[in-house]
Image 1: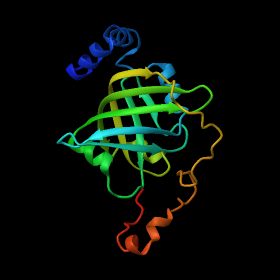
Image 2 (image 1 turned 90 degrees about the vertical axis):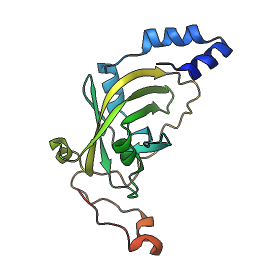
Image 3 (image 1 turned 135 degrees about the horizontal axis):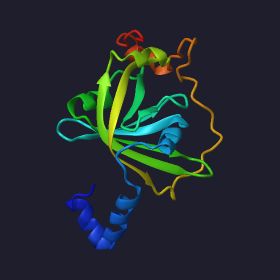
Length: 192
């Protein structure tokens, strides 16, 4: 789980033994029931990807609570919704399938879960039809799953959900920027 860059800093700060203990006691390769329940309770996460040359990108991914699902101890899935059309994250996954996901609550009882693994983007999975607003599906096979210290997470509880979240039986709300004159002629039609 650690490379020489990690080890050099651990040694400089005297934390190698702590890092090793955290890995020994908390890191796992398979999701447990608690992980699945935590992930399903959330309406967002952060996705880190990198292109074939290793240039990083980090995205916020949001949806209704439960839009990310742990389907098996070695499989997590989430939908791709209509966005700005750049496909930065999914394009990176096509070029370099290594991903990092950060799940967190920003509440009175903050919590974080990190998932590092390998992702695949699929267009033909039958599960897509059961997810309102999904146009593609991302499947993640975990390599490292571990909780992270939540000490610096702010309490942002009580905020309202985005009006743009896909909902079954409802036409999606389009963001205003898609109708701006500088973009209107190049915005593609919404796809399933």
